[in-house]
Length: 255
Image 1: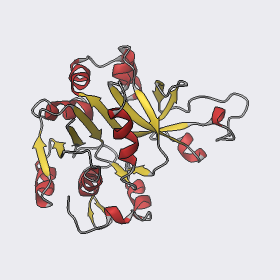
Image 2 (image 1 turned 135 degrees about the horizontal axis):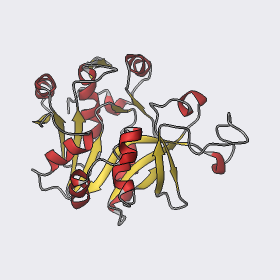
Image 3 (image 1 turned 45 degrees about the horizontal axis):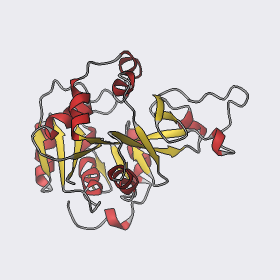
Image 4 (image 1 turned 45 degrees about the vertical axis):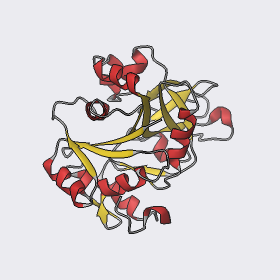
């Protein structure tokens, strides 16, 4: 089964303009994300989807594959769908261009179970361990049912523990999960996703995955313990600089 990874990368950002071209560990951020995406054995192809000529030039400079998409795409997923429509892949992975995979094995936790499941769309969740992140609206939270199916994603703290608001995790019943910014879809599911109108919940939270949930479609989640860091601001980039990537990401291979 062919697996395509698409990395949506937008140059414009109100909080961090030019973010994909900022430097992390001596290389452009987009190159770091691209390299990690190339590590999984099941991945056949990795493509950056962008509306920026500067990002296109950068990706070409490290011999990556890049496709220019229109500037009218509503979200990163819509940009991914535009690229995937041109390529006959059965499974498409969306790794957001600011999601730095500190451990490439994180992709195993997404791709491997998806290929063995009937799920049409999936993503990852990870237990949260700090109050700072739990109360940070830039860190998206997810609640799931007993089988890992997502019930809701939010920038708010969910679930809200009425009797112990500062509690992080003493048991599995109290775990708060963060959403990791990677998705996987069957081809038809991605096509349907892109054709849906923007939903009320999606607009309110600015979370594109709520578009399909509001339409009644299930998103399967799997738990990962492998680290990643989302770069939303220059401060996030500075924090990431202090984290040593695994050797698999620090080789001289430019993929």
